Length: 344
Image (cartoon, rainbow, N blue to C red; front, top):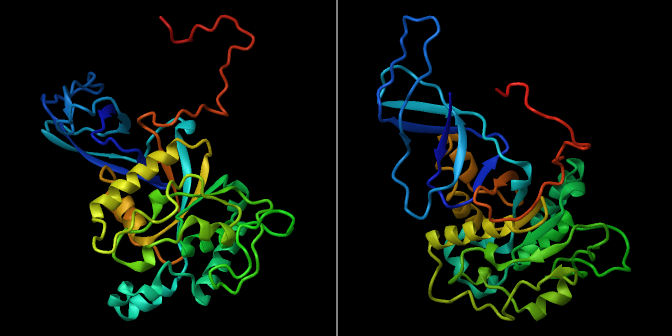
């Protein structure tokens, strides 16, 4: 039995590739299944409500396949399908940066995160090994040929991870994604040849405030280190978002993450890599999946390992983006009579 159910969420919906739904529906009018008949008449289940939605949220819907049972005022509704137009979705590959010097120090002593010595922490030698292994996976899996854009948090460790995993190879005749030994990396320059474009975005930064490892350098300092990364979307030369005395609240990180997801939906690219941070990913993904099976919700929102990549699909259910389909075909070329065979 199919039901159209109004969603009470104003955010874009985010799925893992394997996803499920579980919901409970209130049945207002009683159901008479006429079990004695071999072919029961169509069911009238009356009005179906999830909850009373806010006045500002009325029009977004999701198609679920539901099973009914007799004479219940409350029923379980399980569905394994969600159907959406392809051009209303994007594939996003979420990556947490590789091991940084702050991760090592903070694991030994959490108070080390307050140290100025960890300002804009760079990758460790082990972190670079993790980047090299991620790069091998990106090429072996074919992701390197499919990703159209790399979005990166403008901090040293995330940009090092991003260019190391998704950067090009070869020619020195083009501006490099990373200059030789950038950020004390002891690494050769990384080419931008045959790589997707890279763009730095502040919305996907780590928790802001208090911890010096999460404070960025000036854009003027970054540009010679990462010549082929586009910093044009960063409005301020210095870091005006980070404050020494106030740590950003978890709910504010989540809200910033949802805003970032909505921004992704405005992009033309269909397959995007995002290189960001543990706290940002944890709180952002935790804002999604309330309409999913608990196992899927848990899978989506668990903490990322260093240099872990997870691929997800984000669906634009509220028409935030304006992309048109590149694969749909209008038909009726040439035109002619096309009355449906089941038309009365």
